[in-house]
Image 1 (tube, helix red, strand yellow):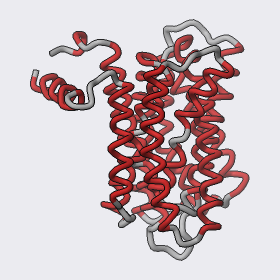
Image 2 (image 1 turned 90 degrees about the vertical axis):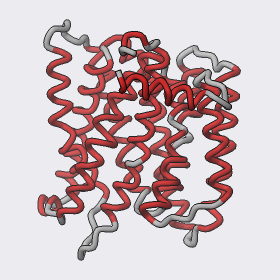
Image 3 (image 1 turned 45 degrees about the vertical axis):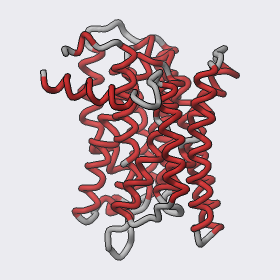
Length: 321
């Protein structure tokens, strides 16, 4: 089946799911980098700087190609790019990286994924949108599941103060990213997904490098090889690929649906955290995973019983042909 025969919505759903998979592994890369044995562990600003430095050549090339045959951007376009770039992949990322110094990858992802709720609220309050019954139902299912897993992580956490500090930073990251997600939809429709995403990421990279220059010595960039490898993996698999997939999904299915499908992320992180980091996995978390998956299938307009299998069958047929 050629790509052109896929409906725009189905392609958007597939891209959103793949983006969730990539983003879900970001916290794993961060925790692995923090755990690399050395006298002074890598700090959040340096790690984010390495991530963005590895990503910037791709975004610079894509931004150039996407812009060379298009009309120049207007002043309001540049204002949107700067504001959203600072909110999204700089502000949200730095708060998230700091929070991960205090809490587990599983708990981080659960708190971070309050942003679909915030995205919908922002859309309703500030952008004149309405939440459909399907979106509200999917939201309730997804966050009931996240709540179950969240309660488990709070129960097993030893240092309540550290959890609260880390949770505060990560919730701030969720708020920042929710504003980015809500504001990016009209910007993408005006400028195009590739052009907007590349330029917003370049703004984020510039802000990150400036933050590093004013707060860290240049010698902080000298790290063990595993730190560079984790940062490179984060740049490719948890930044470049999912960023463009998310923007393309937003263009096809909108910010709210993309955000709701992204609730798969916490569940994926729970499993990766248990597998690679030895973080606890319980029946409560598995029950939460089932509810989140039900919410994702509901918003995808695919039946709970057969929808996921049908989607996988179509994917296999596509790659066979």
